Length: 256
Image: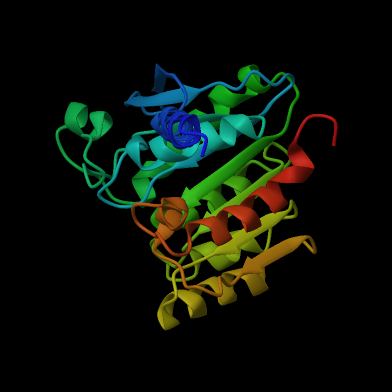
C-alpha cells in the first residue's frame, strides 16, 4: 500500500477547502459615496471585475438591510464578468450584520418610495463606469419594486432588470404594475415559495411590456429577495437559483 496516498488526498482536500474559502470571502470591495438629487449622501461598495468591457450590475437591497446583502454574491458575479455596485439605501438597516451607513448618516430609515432617489444616483454613477457596456438593475423585495419604476422613468438607460420577490410595496397600490407596462428590456423575476409572493410576482410579470421575460419558479423552493442566492439563507436551493440567474445574465457578458 502506498502510505503517501492518504496524505496526498488530504492535501488535495485541504487545498480545495482553502480555495473555496477564499472564493467565499468575495472580491475586494471599494467604498463609494454618491450624492442623490436631494443632496443625501448614499454610501456603497463596488466590486470590479477584470473583464473589459464589463456590464455593470446595480444591486439594491431589501428592507432593514444594507449593501452587505450582496457581499457573498459579489465574487461569483465578478467571475462571470460583471462589476457590481451595491448601495445602502436610505430605507434599510443591519439585517445582514453590517450597519446601513446611509441610514446612520440621515438618522432614520425613510420610506421605500423615498429610496428611489438613491437608486437614481446609482444609475447616474453607472453611466461613466460602464463605458457603453450594459447596465442592469437588480432589486430585492421593496427595491425589486423600485427597479421597475426606475427603468420606466429612464427608458433606454438600463439594459435589463432582475427582480427578486417584487411586490406592490409602494404608494399607490399598483405603481409597480403601471411601471412594468413601460419596461421593454429583458426582465428576470423570481420569488420565495410563498403563495402571496408568487401571486405578486406573476401579476407584475404579466404586466411587463417586454416579450423577453422570465418568471423563474425554483423546484426546491426559494427565500425572500436576493437572499435566495445566499447559501447561508437558502442552503438547499441557492444553486438552482444561481443557474437560472447566470443563464439570464449570460447575454450581457463580453463577447456575447
